[in-house]
Image (cartoon, rainbow, N blue to C red):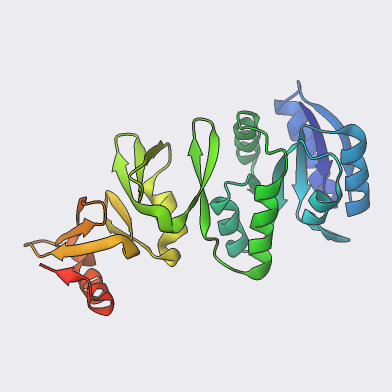
Amino acid sequence: MKIAIIEDEFQARKLISNLLKKHFSSHKIIGEADSINNGVDLINTFEPDLVLLDIQLADGNGFEILDRVNFKKFKVIFTTSYSEYAIKAFKYGAINYLLKPFSEEDFIEALNRISHETLNETLTEIKNTYHSIKLNQNPSNISIPTIRGFEMVNLTDIIYFETIPDQISVTFKNLKKLRINKTLTEYTDLLTENGFERVHKSFLINLSNIKEYKYNDVGGILIMTDGKEIPVSRRKKQMILNLLKQNQIKAL
């Protein structure tokens, strides 16, 4: 794998270079750059397979490089000190990043992970995510990992996430299901500000897809639009009841 390093801090470039030589000696570092113009020239001239790209360069934003390069058939790992919101946006798009200061273990994990991922030839997903960051908006789509790579889905199409042995299952309005090797906590952290709620240890639901609510001696039962009956934990009961009143959802 041919790797380009675009980073305006000398010590950061040195660290990345040393870690690549130490742990990924079969990869070739084809060059380094410390600015947008030099980064564009480096990519167009040497056509790397992977670019380690600092977002905050001294002369501008690293995303500008992705707009200006002619050669676009490479993978990207961002290095960033960006805000919590930007990191959240990266997770929506399943974009690879290293949060500074990163450890040696973080670096190894990122390189190993990206080596097994499919190539995003157009970089469209990265650009869309950056557009969302600039507008400071929560994305309406999320990237779901599949056996072929990633599938972008609209959040409104998801009914619920459910924990199953060693995986989670995602159920959609069209009744399609996807199994993914993630944890429910990861998606809970990502989606609670976008109309989703962890109503039970095994379920994260789209609140807009509740059809009915049934009382019981614990927290109650939610009937989703696909007919699935989902238990509500005792501590979430009052929140759900308040929501039902606001949205006039039928309680049985």
